[in-house]
Amino acid sequence: MAASPALDVPPDPPFKRRKTTPEPTSGTGTGTDSPDDSASAPLAADLADQLDSQERKKYVKGKKLGSGQYADVFEAHLLADPKKLVAIKKIKVGPEVQEFGISYDSLREIRFLQELHHPNIIKLHAVFSTKNQNLNLVLEHLPQGDLLKLIQDTQSISYTPADIKAWMLMLQRAIYFCHANGVLHRDIKPNNLLIAADGEIKLADFGLARPMADPYQPMTYNTITIWYRPPELFFQAQHYGGAVDIWSCGCVFAELISRDVLFRAWPENEINMVKLICEKVGTPTEENWPGVSKLKGYVTPSEIVPIKTRDDWLAVFRSIGELGVDLLIKMLTLDPRVRLTAEGVLRHPFWTAAPRPSRLEDLPRKGGGVEVMGDSLKQRGGELPRNGEANAAGVGRGDKVARKIDFGAMK
Figure (cartoon, rainbow, N blue to C red):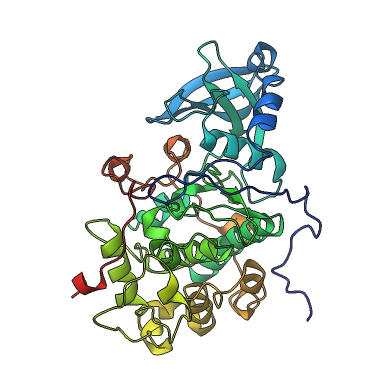
């Protein structure tokens, strides 16, 4: 098969895939994320060499862009070059730390950003600590805000199918690059897609990322922001791969087209989310998803909503065209084994069909400005984009105690 022009990524991964160990499980069997064997003690020890005052003195901190329970974000510049702007994410010391005093989320973010270098992934310039042991990540300055604010600003910002194609292509190249290097992002959503000064989209927040596990090693299903979480995780699957990220990308694609969240359940809990997925996609059954009934969180449904037809999808998303709808359907397929892979997404004919993706210089860029960059970077992985309100209600990172989905209540 000839390579798709959309597959414009370096052919060789920047680092070797590493052997992983199972995620430790809690008493509920939900799994509690930790880095793999190469990402805890060795990485924390390596950080010690970076966390010195000399690194800290290279930067002059400016105004605060955002503040949250997990982190504060500041605009800063290089002491040697005041025109060189950066964002400094100061991660607060909290109770969820491992023996080196660094949270697992922070370890993940540092590890993967140090290893993944791609035009559509936010760049980590440096890491240093302060006297009170707060960890500071010096990140790429992305002054145009994020994709969420751009989607939400329906009054002053309009965009075209060609613009959507350009944004999605940048996202998919980043995800293809992550997956080719054995990394699951596990928190793809519009406010983790920041906009650079030139209009380039940058994937941020690797706090929930994880190396792709051995097929026999379980992973947690309490991950991915609830609106963008795939059905297999609601059914407590502990063996999964890149398909979870593709579902999230499909949700972002639909949100760009309709300018509304595709699966916005209220109240935001697992039961209502599965109910909404059934309503908008169809009910998962053995016929459309062989083996789904064996997942421990699955309960035989009392009512079955047929799988939505192509005409059903076209009625809602016709503006993106038939090929765009075809791609969307294949990204939001219930069975993760049938869902497109990251490479399959980039090989889809949607990208080369008219209209061609917009050029960077033609894309809308007003995604809220640097303050929105601060708001996006301050959030902890898995939070809904409402200043932590949803996370405080216990729906951001997954319920502490998982439960089976009661299809009988979905009437």
